[in-house]
Length: 284
Image 1 (tube, rainbow, N blue to C red):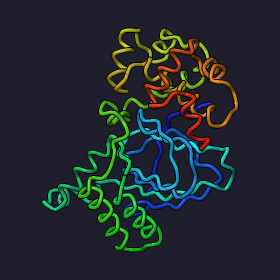
Image 2: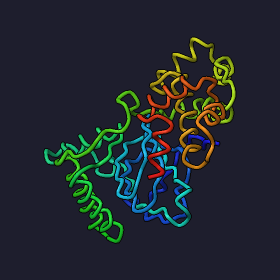
Image 3: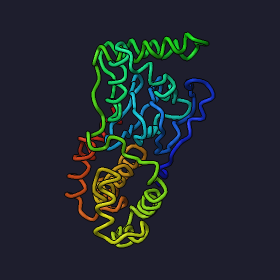
Image 4: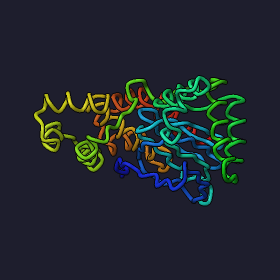
């Protein structure tokens, strides 16, 4: 079953948070937080979800994700245990204060933070250089940590070697004010995606009429309810394609689709791959 979408408190006790995580598999939790996240995959492979982006990840994968964008790293459990390792930074831009961001030298860094609201995957030499700095900041202390963080951000901003992950419409997908209502709807979908989903039921859970619910969902989630439902089903299909030996047809029906052609079209639209192509990518 897919994990519930949750708001995660970063529990930052310092000016920003650094963690070096070594686990059997990355925690499977679709989450979001107000902090900017920079994450380097040191070891492990699987599927990365950022907003409406669904892509494989491998060692060396390095991304920067802006505030309030849902994301998740799902490990490929076929790769065996003890294979997942990542270094990540969480920081709130507000720690610098408005005066800092008003400095001419800071404008380009502020811009890259704003651009990260779509999520970005670093590429080229920038990825390699930032990965080296991530390993240094992991063992640094005191003011050196702040210096290295600013260096990382400046490097990303000046070099511009990155690819956007999420579509422009999913920026700031989650509004904290609406978290409770949306989570009720999300939970209904996550618990029932494998069977027929009722728009009437979803509307009633949100305590809205069908037309009002459709307008509300599109405005708050920046996508239609049907698009979200298909993303959930395709996300589950990705997990099954990687971790189970079931046929494409069996996976199609197990994830709530009742038409194989429609399943394949939606899968390609959301992931950029056919189901078979996605499975082969993890068999390489």
